[in-house]
Image 1 (cartoon, rainbow, N blue to C red):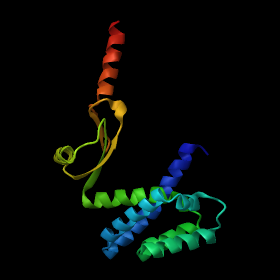
Image 2 (tube, helix red, strand yellow):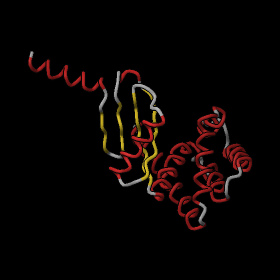
Image 3 (cartoon, one colour):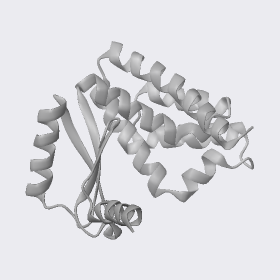
Image 4 (tube, rainbow, N blue to C red):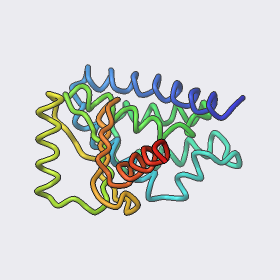
Length: 188
């Protein structure tokens, strides 16, 4: 199995669990609570090397994983639908897809709310005013509520790269210099 197939399979597994959890939470009218719990679980995964180890390490048995994830779900106050799904995933040795599960749940909830996330890479950190102006401009263009996912990459020299859905706008100085370099190679 190639790495690409492995990644695709993980997304497929996570997608099925996420869709089921999402549909149940939607029927129960608890999408807001699920959004909060999903964000909390995602933060726990990012902040805890022990949790990341638990979900991927083969040295933990199904029972060990189920007990640990059950204790985590109880401590974090997860709703039964999410807690039960995590237990099922542990019993089926599927906890390794938790990062993809949280990402997919976040996507499903954002789509339900009419939100879209723009990935913005800038040469320097955006000020609050710049971020607000960019959000408003993107919202006007897309017709959706826009959330920014920002990061700084000093190698851009100046400007920014904005990815919104399948569209990408690259106004960085680095890309402009690269284009100029290519033109000069053709001329020279």
